[in-house]
Image (cartoon, rainbow, N blue to C red; front, top):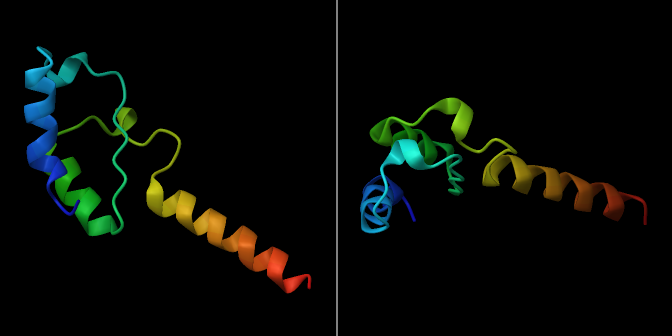
Length: 74
């Protein structure tokens, strides 16, 4: 939550006996873009390995638009 991922991910990866380069994809779902940007930059992740299918912000907006569209039909 918040920017805690920037500190929790390295600990979790290390406790699993891995290095960040061993991880194929990262999914970082934060409520605010600034939290994602901070964590992304702090961790120094490859942009092609993070949120490859869109993050929580993109998915949340898509869901909200779909609900709004359906409600407008009634």
